[in-house]
Image (cartoon, rainbow, N blue to C red; front, side, top):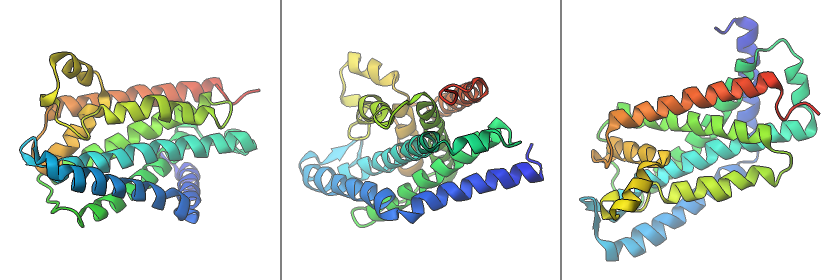
Length: 257
């Protein structure tokens, strides 16, 4: 799949993407980690004392997996959408498109760059959580698999957003009006067992709900969803989003003026 020159192109894109966000780490890594730290203090520590237990665990333990996953989702998405759109805006992406590099290599390079930032911030948040609670992973393979697949899903979604975006305002519409509500309604701060039947049904339509709960299962050993079903949904989203990205790249959607 990756011959020598294709691998060099892929490696170049990935290294450039990683250097891009690590060079300005005070803007890309520290602020999201600080924001999640405030969630730990306000919701987990202060509010959690009054709530007590949630789903059979102390409230701080319950929200930690969701907050880690939230950081991975937001940063995987935002890295790809901002980076690829910047290349479009500066017209530097044209140099990549006219080169003898297949579309799937270009796409994989940006996706891996987004994964690197998402997983990097997730690792920082995980380290921060150790100051607030004892974190013991119950199932390491499931924990690693779900966080990797989730970062791929939202890196691909960010790529599609960047293709359709015509201005810097357009890259903030989806995170603000779609991604953020889905995250907050995805079971990060509550168990679905607390919801009335109608809202349980709405939660079941939210893909982030499955990602958060599967990650919670990997760490705490407890989940509100079927893990096999969750992985099936993740893989289905990856296939659909990947095919959409390749199709849009071949058509030149958002790239041809």
